[in-house]
Amino acid sequence: MATSFQNFIGGTWCNSSDGKTFENRNPADWNEILGIFPLSTSSDVERAAQAADDAFRSWRLVPAPERGNILLRAAELLVRRKDEIAAIMTREMGKPLTETRGDVQEGIDTAFYSASETRRMFGINTPSELRNKMNLSFRIPVGVCGLITPWNFPMAIPSWNIFPGLAAGNTFVFKPAEDTPWTANLLIEILDEAGLPKGCVNLVHGAGSTVGEAITKHPLIRAVSFTGSTATGKLVAQNCGVHTKHLCLEMGGKNAQIVLEDADLDLAIEGVLWGAFGTTGQRCTATSRLILHEKIHDEMVERLVSQASKLRLGNGLETGIDVGPIINEKQRKNIERYVAIGKKEGAACILGARVASGGNLDKGWFFEPTIFTKVTPDMTIAKEEIFGPVLSVLTCSSLEEAIEINNSVIYGLSSSIYTRDINRAMVAARDLEAGITYINAATIGAEAHMPFGGVKATGNGHREGGWAVFDFYTEWKSVYIDYSGKLQRAQIDI
Image (tube, rainbow, N blue to C red):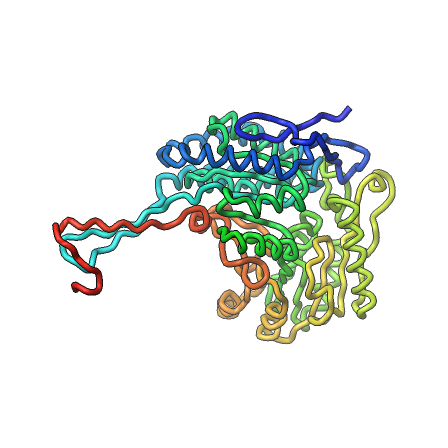
């Protein structure tokens, strides 16, 4: 019988208010039920928001370095349990153990980084324009924050938000994806064991249409961070806008790797294999477009197909697996739909485009790594996010044309260029419309101490990761100290 799991509200593990549940299954072996989780309601969000608001009153007054000490203990617990968590995560969402260990490591890195920043949340202090007056500014916490996260990085993405948010003095109502609830429970267990006060983080499982929507509308929740599709992000933005909440959106991507004629092709092939087919293409930073200079196009494609055809599909718990399953049946059908559209619009499929089958692959939602050539910028598969192991190859005749192709989509998350020419690399870094640009590296591989996010339809200007995330999880307070003993009117009495 499958294990039953619970929400975590006000420091107590509890069932949903109406007792309804949902199943968590292994995408590599759909017959394996990993656990039963609460299908929560808006009433559960109400309790969680109230618990977070009550906790905020005291948590915000805890000295920031003391808050950092709790995060340090959480980091140490994550280190101790890294392999255990990685194995559970692989069972939940499918990517190989090497990748899930990296996912946990992002959580570890973010915890250590956030703990260190609790001694560095500097204000900006400037001279006053008046005599006998001092101007100061401070970062203060926002309050109760809502967090809605996806399934593809079930430890890293919650960590990017919860750890710096707690460091800044905020509290949370956290809704993880229904496909990866177990990893979320493990993170909460660790924070609880590390000594986080009751109510500072509240975990509410359930559907986005109920729990997620309730978070975006609740009056006690002052800020919301959402990572997911652009379509859902727009709905989140509407709700948060009506209720004047702070909002951080991290949404879609249609990332391109540019390879110029002077590039190291061996290195470029390694990059696109990892970028396009790592995490089975289920990353917002995945390489879904490959823009090749016409002089090296044919050689690059031939070598790429040869290498991609050798990638091994299977259960990520097995040794030597390169590509895991698609997260669920609905998403695999969506990938099949895009492949059919690509063929209909005239792209040439030269690899894959099939459901992977045979042996243990029949138990899960596997799809073969797929490559299309003869793709033009106006084709659907060159414009829309597929979120699967599907790569569209386009051709350019110059750096300028490559940049134009890259910038022709509505998204702007990650980008990449392979060239030995530093001058052209610098032009690309300047002109590519993206929040992230890699020089001679794949479009994926963000580091925890750097800002992460995109432009255009990818986001709304905020950043996760690094020092920039504290700009979202804090507000500025200006303090004027007048010790002149008389009324001084700024601008008027200068």
